[in-house]
Amino acid sequence: MILNQSSSRHRLLDFIRRIPGIRGLRTHAAWEMRALFNVIRSRISGAKAEFGGHAPAQRPLHWTCSFTLEGGVSTLSAEFSRLGIHHNESAHAIYVPPQAGLAGMLGDFVCTYPKDAGFKILKNHPGDREAAPGLSGPRSDPESDNALVGTAWDLIPAANFLYERNIAPRLYDITRLHAGQVPLTALVVQHISGAAPSAPECRAFLSSLRHLLEAGPLVWRPVSNGPHGSWPDADDNLVKSAADGRLYHVSLRNFSFGDLATHLDSLLHEAKAAVHFGFPVLFRGGRHLYQQVPGWSRAGKRDTSLRWQQIKALLAKAGIAMNGRVVLDVGCNAGMMIASALQDGALWGVGWDRPQVVQMGTRLLATLGYTRFNLVGANLCEPRALLDGVPAHLAPHLDVAILFHLAMRPWIGFPDGLSTIPWLAMVYEGHERESLDDLPRQVQELQDVVPCDLIAATRIRDGDCRSRPLALLLRRCTDLGPANGMSHRAAQRSALFTGAGASIQVCSVAK
Image 1 (tube, rainbow, N blue to C red):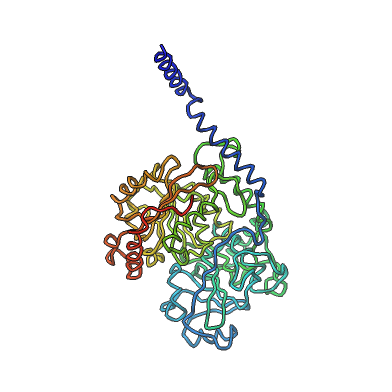
Image 2: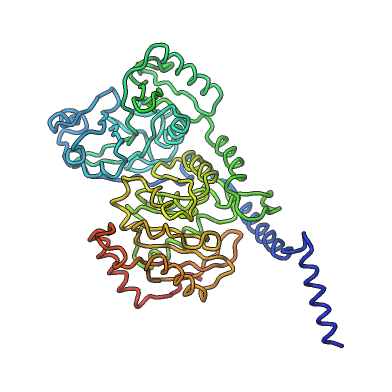
């Protein structure tokens, strides 16, 4: 009798679970409760950080020039002439366009950037919050007639906005050069090769630019003593590209956002539809961001800052630093993990996801002030989808790259494309239903695609998610020898980690 009652109860429960709307109710309720807890915690700690020093930004790179300046920046033009470097000088900067042999004359760092990169070296640099040119920080003097209006933080989002609309060339980076004891601030920009446009073309372009500025969110900030203080005219800042026939405004110094905070707020609201992943959550307002935007919004399923700190701890356990490395993110979503890597000094970030996701992720990163990244819309199951998305100038740096494969295995597995890129280390994050006991089976599945070894593992928890495994894997030297692009330095480093792996194996760096 008791057995029959138990059997009937199980049949009833099974029937209830099959009813549409009831199935998964317990799981959804758990998501809602976790979201509610984190929403309350976020409100207590403050859901929004103000711009002007609090919002994270990519760390400036420092490079050593091949020459020294004994007489200071005022002698730079003469030094370039002596070295045979073709350059153009204006009141505020010296521009060095792409040219043969430039790396040998200016510095090897030239090869770190795309082949079409030009270097606009400033005679002065805007106020910043550190000795190097900060990429964020309060404007020290709004009326300053320095080489740039305001700070570099003002410049980057505006430059990215203009590039997105085919008005200005791409800003690849703002970096620090060292010519002996003389520090130099340089804008690394896409060089536009072409000729001066005709007068009618200039008038049409400037009319369109005026309408764009009137509609917002950009404003034109005049320089009081500049030759074009009130409005850009038909000068040499307008170039008609020989490549696509478009007109570009190659000077970025007068453009900035009037209200960047409001613009970003609007963009975050728009992004929810594109980058949302999973089920809508009532306490997150339905469809919501998957990744929180550090320094601005905590309204996301994953706590980006906490997640990044746990990833860094795992990398530190194996002695791997982010400085100067290329970071590859398979399933990058809005690109916030790439943003975190750039904050810690990564050289460049490349991410892949669905086209509509990376389109919005690119806009978010650009508005937040990041430049050293490429997000690629791709079908990750295509064998060459990953390799084809890596810019050519990053190829020499892939042998020590870090690849992120975060919470993607249930959706794409380990695609064959992982074997086409010569990465050195992989950070693997499992699903929240998985445990450390599942790692050997998952590592074996990965090894069928790329020979690698498990170096360290732990469990992490952040945001609205439950605990899940996090692992660090190192690619084997035998799989990635010189014939496949691994340099001698990468082989040495890989051998070091492989030796350490025998003692580390699966360990816990956080609870």
